[in-house]
Image (cartoon, rainbow, N blue to C red):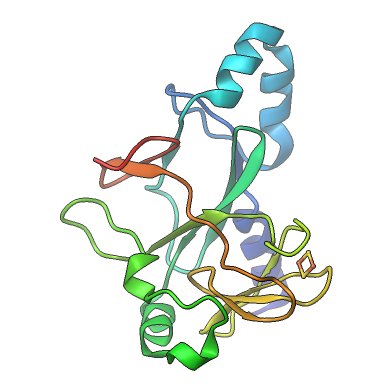
Length: 182
Ligand code: FES
């Protein structure tokens, strides 16, 4: 992959989405002017409301970060090799073992290929950085904790996995964070 490809990937990886039921999607920091124009009461409502995310443009291997209730969440569409690596990994690889298929989500009738996790490290709350080793998916720059592509801690001081938020799929292309599972 060329350096310009990396740049393109990085830009895609940091789509930040802050949205309510209307499903507003923004790239980079352009969402913040929208948020700042809201009146305090509307902002407060938006901060607590479920967040709807359009998944249709997210490619396998891509990560986006969304904000719900003021906290960041990762949404990562796994590649086939990442899914296989997560499923094949033995229990001994993990500090807080949980089967991969309990952490990889799918819309009804769709493929299990989505990791949806809190984006704050469970050590001291830093935001881990995406890595692409096939198995390990994030490294925390603060004290070196590593997480696999499903957010399970593999190394470092983080005591537990990246938590899964409440979420539901409205359909194949729409995810709602903050909604109870159907
Ligand atoms: S905050 Fe992530 S390893 Fe310390």
